[in-house]
Length: 389
Image (cartoon, rainbow, N blue to C red; front, side, top):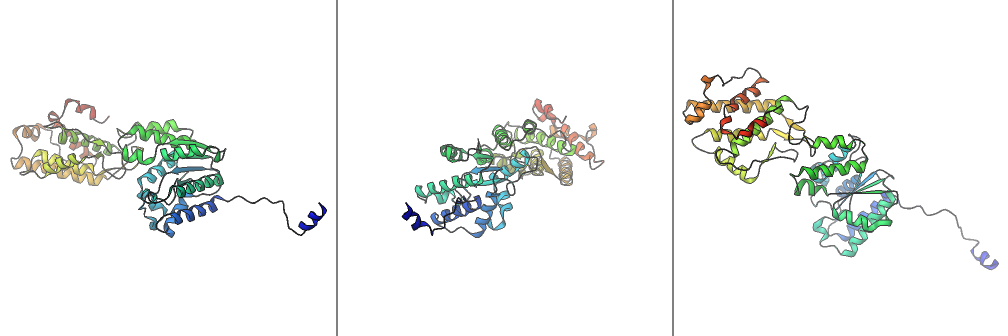
């Protein structure tokens, strides 16, 4: 034993343990591995934007686990453009902002990592299964280094893998599971129930104490919010009347559904809706149906949804007023040129005192409603339920 001690006495042996890798260094390992198995190099812009989404690398906080990156993100424009250009990330960003009452964002506060970072679905088809498994191991290593308080698994693929990893994940990290954003906003875009569940899962993962109050707002998506601008509320009312006139008179067709995708009009028009509108708009000579369809088509694009979850709209009153004036002038031209049927002429007869000229900017929206009320006999009886409260 003494001779063995003498042989190793010159070695510098310390009691310090090897420091584990940080989340930052593990991310570097992920990028090197992904770059070695895909058929194209990872650009500096793609690396930087993906790293910003995966940050912060400090322990704790929330980590959102997605599935695969899209192949054509605008990497060169920065992470903000990547989020705004991708409906999946944009809906996730807004959900986090609503859940935290504006305190958290994907860029600064929540780590967002794909199950297969840097490997798009198209690239994945050409990658060996063993290499993908190696990527999974590095993702687990990243989660262990990050030690998030919460891991929200988005989609079946992320959920199944996280459950399979089991004890390999940090014991202090609480796992939550929900739908993939694409399932909610792309494949079930008209299902408010799935959207409500998705936002509720984000709320529960982040731990918001007033989630029931926020979720209740989703129930107002079929009507205007209680504090909506009166002019906006009246314009929505006009659009609902026009929708009946365009698609249910004289032949009853399916009404369009409310649009639930931001930056689009109030109604989500199907291709057949658009074909019918264009056919009537091009009708010669002009008629009341063609005028109504054009008015509906233009007005629908002037109320733009501004949220994936809440009844918030962008609305330009001056633009709407110009459309209203054009519509009224069109009605007058039809009447003067004898292009209204006897019934239509009777409905719009100004001698009955219902043809109200514009008196003020605000009042003009109500004037058009009086004019449209003259068309009420053309509309199904339940139209009265559409009147604003």
